[in-house]
Length: 353
Image (cartoon, rainbow, N blue to C red; front, side, top):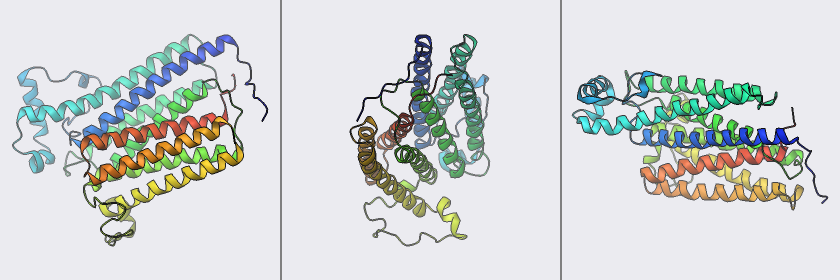
C-alpha cells in the first residue's frame, strides 16, 4: 500500500485546531463525569431529593439548619418520601441531596466549560467557518438536555415514587448523543495520518456508533425499571435462553418499555447484536483495509466490547452492586467514545474552511 500524505494545513490553522481540540476533550471528560454521577444519582435513588428547578439560585446549597429543614420539608411532600423513605432523618436526606446537587452542579459546569471558550474562540477568529454551526448545534443540544432533565425529574414528583423510565432513557441517550457529537467534532480537528477508509468500512463504523447508542438507551430502560435486580443468571434467563412471559402485558408493544423481563431480555439481545457487528467490522476491515490503522482500531473496538460484555454479565450475576454498575456505565461511555472517534477517523480530518 502506498504511503498517505495528509493535505497540508497552514500552521495557524493547525494551532487553532489544537486548542479547539483540547477544549472539546475537556468537555468530553466533564460529560463523562456528569453521566457517571447521574448514574450514581439513579442507583442511590437520589434524583428526586431536589424538588425544584433553579438554574441559577440552585448553585448554592442549603446553608444552616433552617435552610436544610426547608429543603427537607419540600422533599417530604412527594410520594417517594411517603411510600419509601418515610421517617428518614435529616442526615440521611443530606446524603441523597448531595448526589443530586453534584449532578446538577456538574451539568451547569459543562455549560460554562463549553460556552465561555466557545465565545472566546469565536470572538478571536479561532473557529473555522465550518466549525461554527457544529458548536452552536452542540450548545443547543446542551440546553435541550437541561430542560429534558427537569422534565424527567418532574415525572416523579406527584404520582410516582421514581422517575419515568421513558424519560430517564431519553435523558441518558441525549447525554450520550451530545457526548458522541463532541467527540466527533474534536476528532475531526485532530491530525489524520491515514487515508480515509473505503465506503464499507466507514458505514460499518458509523453503524457501530448507532448500535452502541441504542444499547445505551436499552440500558436506560433497564435502569429505569430496576430490571437488572431480577433474573440474575447467564446465559439462561429465568431458566431458558428465551424466557416465557415476554409479552404478558397488553398491548404487546408496552412490554418493550414496561415489562422488566422483556426489557432485560432485549438489552441482552442488544449486547449480542453489538458484539456480532463488532466481529463483522473486524472481518470487513481486514479484508478491505488490511495493514491500516482503521483495521487495528476495529480490533481494539472489538476488545472493548468484549470487556464491556464481561463487566455487564458480572454486574448482573452480582445483582447490580453500585460499584460494578458504575463501572459498567463508565466502560459503556468508553466504548461509545472509541466508536465515535473510530468513525470520524475513517473519514479523515475536516477540510480547512
